[in-house]
Length: 320
Image (cartoon, rainbow, N blue to C red; front, side, top):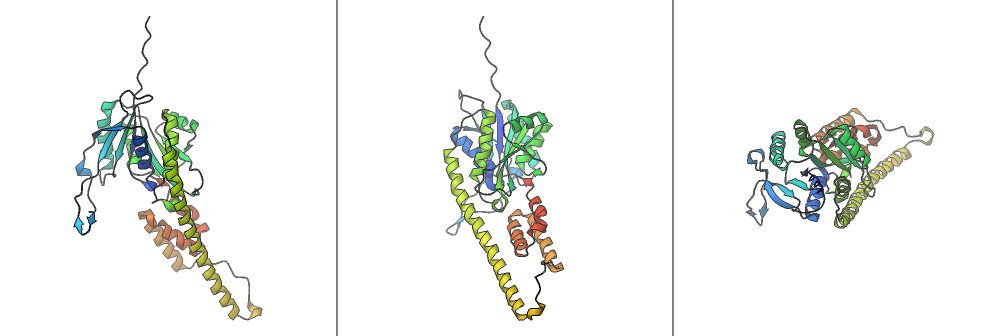
């Protein structure tokens, strides 16, 4: 009696857009390159994108175009689970949830089994540490699968942008969805982070049962790690220099006082003006996290970071 042929594996859809550290786009782009995935379709939604700038070269304004949103897939006959990777050059400027619905409508024809996104999570991880991979899923069963694979559950917060919104749209269609988030240093949120991208790609490859040569991505991560370490060193030297300057003023002031009245310096207390300035910096950083380092520098200068540490880190609970 002839054997029944095995049921073909249904494809997984991995979608990625730019975000903090560009973790999602780096990981998805590397996956496309290493597995030789081929472009085969696009999502056209010109009404949901806008152009906010133009490029100029030698005084001449160059031709511009709207961002592309392209599907790639595993070549026919390739071993292992079939994959469909959707890579967006930019996130929609408006109507993000509508765009997610349109994407899944297009993907419905591919009979996908689950939806996966990558994102980054800003934390206090040191550049030389191995980034942890955090996970969020649309069901407890799927989350348990991710935890068995070594990911840590996201305890609270938000996943911003399409890397999160797509999973809400998937839930509406009863499609299982998950997000793998790689840790990046909060003070380098705008620096592309291949090390975190490699961490989420390692986790994904284990999950999907695909083999990926990570050597090139590992080397890129090593180079960027060195650059971030230099940035961290400069920040620390700036803070130490400001502390030394304040100490010199304190010594000079003490020298002017009679010896019998000199007392141990009291712990610095923030006046109303300083607290008002801090509140404004928090408000600015909440609107644009690129300004968070201005806030950090001011808190360090005032010796108040410990007092505001939890609130400062809350600025980065919205992963993307």
